[in-house]
Length: 45
Image 1: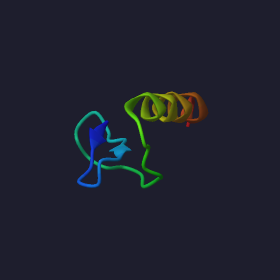
Image 2: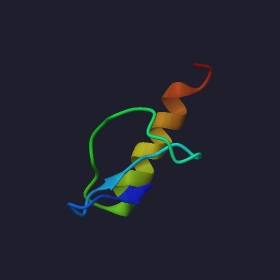
Image 3: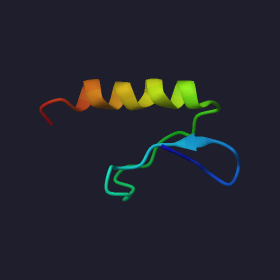
């Protein structure tokens, strides 16, 4: 996760590449929830 120039949190792949574009999150905690949701829904993809 990283904080963009607008102060929003975004998700990024472990190697630093952006592999998908989605919403920005207002807080770090909500960004963590978004990351967990991506992990849950992408299992086995």
